[in-house]
Length: 309
Ligand SMILES: [Zn+2]
Image 1 (spheres, protein in one colour):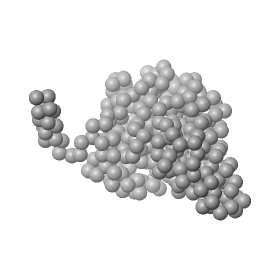
Image 2 (cartoon, helix red, strand yellow; image 1 turned 60 degrees about the vertical axis):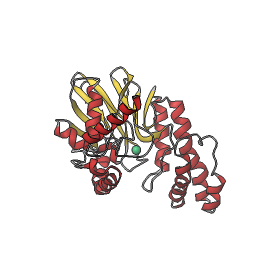
Image 3 (cartoon, rainbow, N blue to C red; image 1 turned 30 degrees about the horizontal axis):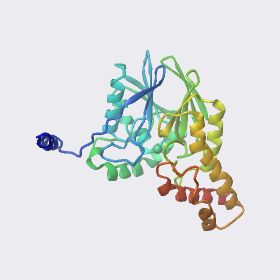
Image 4 (spheres, rainbow, N blue to C red; image 1 turned 180 degrees about the horizontal axis):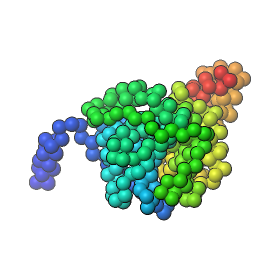
């Protein structure tokens, strides 16, 4: 009986959903005071998760909501808005982009259409323009028709300077370049809350990804600067909200490994394959999700970066 009901329910739900099902609904969790994180799944972009396989966050102020990163599509942005709506009736007045990778900003147009001002550092916005077509194409392959209605909108308010202090709704935010995962990536630091939204500088629970345009050298430098801030709470780019010790173990130590072991071998012109073989199995990082798929490619890209310096 129970089984019949379930099957009937599934059949009805199927009839009501002409486009691909996308049951994943992000949820907000409080980090501290008026600061919230939305922690996405660790796996790949999919029609089910609408490309929200990353972390987002928001700050509720008396003047409206400040959103950190806007999701990978119009429908993804709507899901983020719904998660915020469960916490507050305040409208999203400001969106800050920490990066130019799809899930950081392809929802900008949706929030701008609902009255939000979209803000990023100048190089972040420039990189968004540069990668817009490429990221739209890639997202269409992952999400199919669920990308309909998505228009790439690079942050219209782009800020000059390497670090910028913003006062929004009575909240103080510091936007600083990290330039690690993508050129022009940045973090958002809330000094009064001791919370940092690291963008794609910090990954925990899963292995960080070094892409052809990433910089391990910049990642190592930025991570050290982040550690000096001694944040009480880190909302990483991917993975659960964590403390500095976990971020150090799962990202900081890995940047150090890539720069100091793989990078050193590259500078000394040791053969790449032998270097990658030597470090193929690292027990201290093996428990991280995606380790098997990413670790060797990460070392390969780090080697190439340091070889050319
Ligand atoms: Zn990411």
